[in-house]
Length: 369
Picture (tube, rainbow, N blue to C red):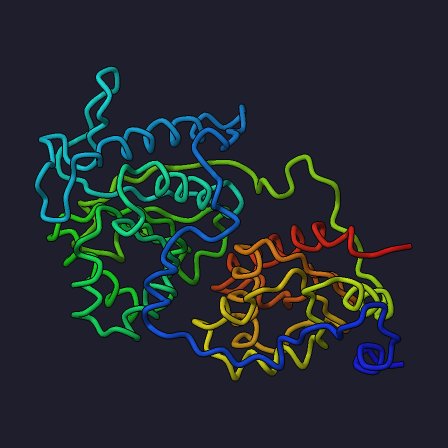
């Protein structure tokens, strides 16, 4: 029996049939894009105190110390620039802490995937003493989507009143978007907005095990003076001392779990990949609204790079929302070809594998004997 037949012919064990991602075509208004510029659900409760530094990586402890001081230094800042001290936005606000150089108004977290950069970025957002409406948090893709929805000038006006803008996964592989966002950030810096960012590396940096601060600072050109780079070394925490991810299940097990789990979706993986091509990635978050689990049958290698990049975005949204993923077919570390894993987007693909593996581990309890 094929996977699609298994998904459609298995006897349900719950009254309602599972949901389907392929049946969803969400429309997201611009005001929702603005309102949702907060740390994703997975990072609702993270704080500096919940970040557990690797004792073998002193840069992690140092990053927490610097970022705590950075957040404290934003307490008297205003969008107009009023309230800034001579220490600038990296002034520490603690008498025992050393003064940071004058001038920089942002921090850039430089480290490989899985070292906790997003945890620290979200902790900074939470620790900054300002109302949520005066702080914004989003990925680079979400920020470019906001510009597309509101227009450049309206985006500048909307964000200029903020005390802090956090940008996760700054994309350095699209020169046009990089210039667009760099220009936007220049306007926001002029308005007194503090910045914090993480980034992905440029294509062609094949031998590096971490992202490159020099690349980030060079690509944002005139903004480089406004950032202080914080290097965060370490291994992917999702695999640090954790058990191996479970092997894929059978089609029948996945289908049975989907019917037995309230709020679960059930889709054939190749069909889902086709559907993602018809939904703009800015809507992938809305695509997952209300889901308690995602069940996929017949997981196969992705056929091309465009499909792979869309899957990366979906994996990010599922991970942000802590949605378990139960699957049959190939294991997630076989999703991307060797050529993809050696190419310019390799770090995106490794991040997707890491995150999907974590979500597969979370889904283990959905399967009954």
